[in-house]
Image 1 (cartoon, rainbow, N blue to C red):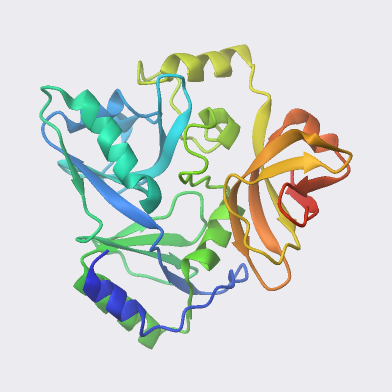
Image 2: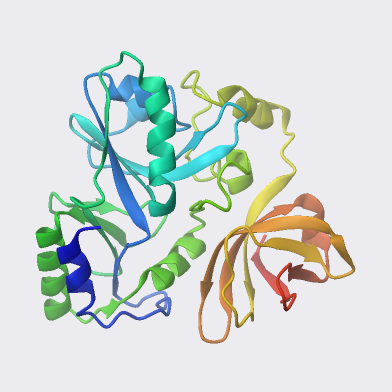
Length: 307
């Protein structure tokens, strides 16, 4: 991340509390980074590596997608944006280098360049703010009234400063923005959860992040078999708990009456004042469990918010 951008962020009073449904907010998305994919073969290359239909993308219209291994397990989820002759993959900073190295193995003689844009491009999330159309602004997938700003450190600083001066907005940290992602059901993956789930376990089929008629891609056989045979026995759910300690992705979920039988995994967690918001991947039988809990030191009780 660019030093000038980090210096600017230190001047902001960032809130860690997820805003209310109608509250105007702005957030530097420091947990995300950008991998640019360019070259004359970029579209064909990505079409053969990702779950979404890259060739159906329109310029400036983001879409969720996933990159899987040969066994159909999701290495990373991402937001993809087509910018004329290149594609931007927005994914968690923790997995960018992993994804870049794995994709590089498949380029062979194709005219494709993978470029880490972490220093060159800054990401800002905007919610419930009236904005004029501009080149650096894109709809944020799955989030009503949400926008994604992508620009140089200087452009990002100017955009943020002007928005804060002109409108009454809450300035959030990444924890608060992840709360909005949890509410939208966007399953960001980290090192603790990479290559653990087929895309349907992350509800990516429901988020229009999987194309079942675009043709072959890495892991496609497993993903398609799961879809057409209906053999998926896990899904993702929103939940909450009153844990005081930080909850990390990958934390297990069990029933208090059968602790040895793990029923699920934490995908995302954000800590608020009185409760933590969670995205969980759960086995089907977990939905009927009466005493779901985290497999952490305090065995904090979990309440499912949406089924």
